[in-house]
Image (cartoon, rainbow, N blue to C red; front, side, top):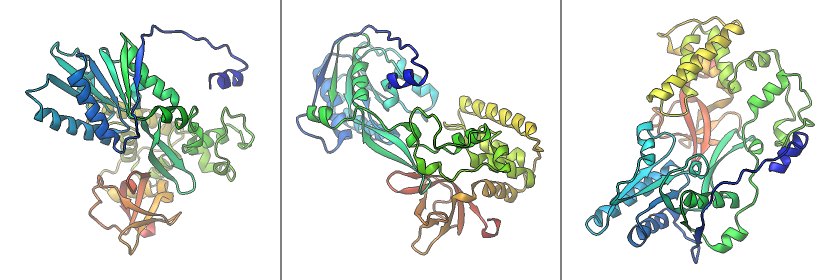
Length: 391
């Protein structure tokens, strides 16, 4: 990959800076494991009972896995409370409050051991002092966009060999360590890929395509990409007058269209607030997230003035707010069907309202959703009810 980037940018030199490294012993399973979460929990307890009192880092796939492992460890350590030394269990994921996240960096008490339950972000972005043992589940979750049905799928996939090596390297930052891989040596050698599917080939390119078109680049098929995107997403692309206005806003095209429509319905101030909070990736009651939302709001407000959109307030009329969202996200319409599910209007795909939605226990006839996500089922997330005549 480094060579590809170097060649793309006119054979730019590649500099390699070696770091200080210690040895790490790798341990494999003798046979594949059916339940990697349970195996990870058992391995944590085995290390805690048999190995020297140094900290453990466990790699799991997502927040759900981390919370499950957390509960299992709490339950099992409670049963063994008087027989083992203190085990401090610390989960880390993006929606965890920041004051709980920073606990993973606090020094471990002398008579205790710390176990950190993390996603693949800990492969490279985090360095936690005191980690001598790594437990590698061998899996991660990857977001993939399907252009045919407009659905984002969060799927569990085997990690790359490079990721496996990065995970093992977390045990050798300050001293020699051990890595316990919850898969076989044969799996590492024969089933883990060397190269990942490039992000440009598995993500929604709507915003990037709009930007290229607005810059006057019309031949997207033969454009000089580092990695080629899926051609089916680029064949029928033309820039309209509306598209040029949308391109002025650094947002997903449907969010931009929602902002433009808010001028017609005289609720642009309310839509700005909704879009700003939508762009907050974490729980918006956190100070840092609300601060980010305010910055996003101010940036978008300035851009609206630049493209001559009048900012008006209409807090009492929620119907016009929903009409503005409908104007931007009409492509994301779903209709209630006889089988008790909703069907997307564009692709006739059966989907469910996400359990976290306030509309989960209701049966609205028509809804607009922000995104489709495939997890255990095909869910609509961030849903509002609309009227048929608004379409």
